[in-house]
Structure formats: C-alpha cells, structure tokens
Length: 430
RNA sequence: GUGAAUGUAGCUCAGUUGGUUAGAGCACUAGAUUGUGGUUCUAGGGGUCGCGGGUUCGAAUCCCGUCUUUCACCCCA
Image (cartoon, rainbow, N blue to C red):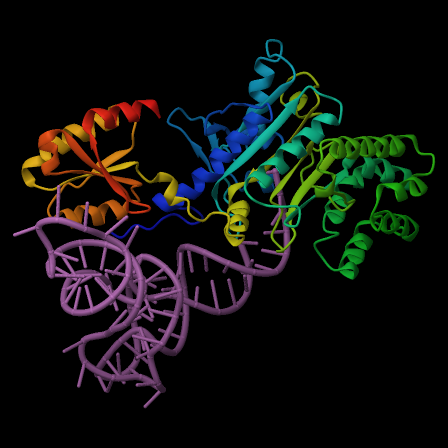
C-alpha cells in the first residue's frame, strides 16, 4: 500500500531539519539573551480548554479525539491556554516578572495554503505581571531582535503597532454600541487588506449611522500619533490610550528600534482576548500574512480560573517566516554547519583497525569524526571526505609505523605529518 | 467549508492532432583512479505518467470521480 503524508504536514529530511533547527535554535538563543526562560506543556489537552474561550468556528478547526477512558481531548492549536493554566497553578510561587518562552509544535485543521499548514511550530514569548508598556516594548524588541539576528534589516520588515484600548475608547466616544464592538473590530482589521471602497462598504453593513461611519473613517485615516489628539477631543479613556502609545514609542526609541516601528491604527488582531497594545510584523516586500503578531491580554489568566493578572506576548510561526527567510536567501549554507571535523582514511586494508582506534579516540575527545565503511582506494575515501564536508582528513598510511599521521586541510589542500601524540595534545588544547 | 487551477524519475521540467519500449539536466550508484578529494569523462539504477474508473483497436494525452499542492473566499488563536 502506498501511503502518502497527511495534508498540510511536512517531512523534515536532513536538509529541511537543518533549516528548521536554524530557526528553532535562533528562537531559543534570542529568547534567552532577552531574559526569557523556556517552558513547554503537553501536546494535547482537554478539548474543553479550547472550546471555553473560542467559538464553534475555532472548535471546528481542532484535531479532537476521544481517548480510551472517554476523555474528550484535542491536539494543541496554540499554547497560550496551557501557559495560562501552568501560570495559574503556581501563581503564588512564581518569581515576578514571569518572562517565559516556548517553541511548541501546534496543529490546526485549517485549509492549507502558502504560509499556513496544519502542523507547524510557533515561537511564543510572554511577560506576565508587568503593567507598564515597557513589557510590550520588550516583547517587540525581542521579536525584532530575532528577525535582525536572522539577517533581516530595517528595509525588510516593519512592526505595525496600535491599541485595542484606543480603538475601543474612540468607538465608544463616537457612540458605537458595546455589543457591536467585536463586529466593528473585524471590519477595521480588514482596512489594510482590502480596497478602500470595499472597506467602506463593509463598514456600512456593520454601522448604519453615517455620522458614526464618517468619524470612524476619519480615525482610520490617521497615520501618526500626533494627529490622534484632535479626534479624541477631551475623552479621558482615549487620551489615556494615546499617552500609553506615546510612552511605548518612547521606550522603543530608547531601545534603538524606533525606525523599525510604525503606528498603524489598522492593526486590530482578530482575537477577542486582546485588551491593550497590539502589533503585527510584516515583510515589506511581499504581500504575505503577518510574520508575527501579539499584544496585551489582561483577562486571559482570570478567564482560565486564576487571578486577574496583566500579560503581554506574541507568537511567530515557522511557515511564513521560513518562506520569507528562504526568499531573502538567509537559509543558505546550513548543511555546512553539520560538517565533521576529521575524516579518517586508511591507505591499506591492514590499517583499518588502527583507523578505527583513532576514530574512537577522536570521538571520545569530542571531535566530530567519521570514516568509510567500505575503505578501498585512498582516492575513494578522500572523495567521501569531500562529500561529507570534512574540514580535515587524517590519513593513516606507511608513516603510521613510526607513529606519524598525515593531517590534510581539505579547504586549502595543505597537509603535514604529525606524531599521533602531538596530534591529540593539540586537540586537547583547542 | 465554497470556487478555480495543478500533478510525468529524489528535484526542475520536455513529451507532436491519442500511436511502437515515456525522455533530458541536476542528484544518486559504479568505473576511469591500488598513497591524495572538489573538476572531467564513461556506464548504470530509478517512473503502475498522483490514485480509481470510463471512452478507444490503442490513453501520460480525452471524459468522470478522488487525493495532493497552489490561488481566491471563510478564518487566522
């Protein structure tokens, strides 16, 4: 029977694994240097955990199943609920601030498209318990730090930042009913994704009153923080939100990444649980979906049965990121990183045992070493050494009778005879 | 979930109005090369033409279904 891979999944051959590890290793490295510590949870949880905070739409995109004990479970589609559960369970014992990161494998039964698969990895960084928008600035800095470390530049990407609090306050100030907020958010989120006339038409369907629509359109056309004041008038909540945004941009400037960030009132985020600062990172060149998205969520821990504790964070999936890094040529030459240090070749069949002893010694000493199973002509073995990207080749030949090894540099072709004892002494010093 | 396009070797692709045993480049294996690799040359292996059914004397080619991938919706935690 010919079995093919499941829709929306990927096989990771060694070269694919090298790319995946490049991303995962960098996520980890950047997280740690930004002061985050790693956590993880189970790959499946109770189905109810995801149904609780989500509608039927999201529930229908879960991989759910029943175990032999009749428990209804689901493979995790995100890790934030797990984070909330874990933090809630130990909230009184955890030192603050809580700065945690994870790179979980997630599954969603969505229709696969470019940059969206059914199984993927998503880097999550979260800061729990810090009210000041300095925490939001840190999240944004960390995400930007990663993209810069991956080789991207200010010319490649932009962090678009807005505030749910601001939009909520303004809509309330304009007289939009509270129960209509989520519907209006959904429309506003489309602002930069569809043509202007289509946007206005959608808004018209959501809001009947033309005066309110005019005000919303005026708000949505604002392209800088300074122009917001005039529209907000004396509304206290709106002005608080504006002040918070100004403070955030101040932090970002202090941290030296202001040139990567832009106020964009069209950033709303689909998810209902965001309550404050929200942001998304986009590739400037393509029209791909966001590389990264996140924001402040103040009610989530309470929603999962804990205390009301403020939190902020973001997620970055490996699908869109991988495509963009690939397009920009930033995932090249990764196989070389796995190359071995020493390829041991033996000139005669009778020297195979000596080669094996040397290999074992090299490996015990911590060097990456390999050899040819087949042996055969020295030329063949050298060929294999090149094929596996060995940086040096150790040849065991007639000189070995006097304890001499031939060490050849495979990059420049130079070689020299070295006594075995000196060779290992030199190895230890490295 | 809706609509559309796509599928030939591991990869990128040829393949005539339906006509003999489906090809190329790269990759892979082996040899040229019995103490020196990357280059080169030669040879070889590898395809139920995504899968299933239909039309036909005859199907990679035409028709239907199905799966995959991609695109536009829906959604995007």
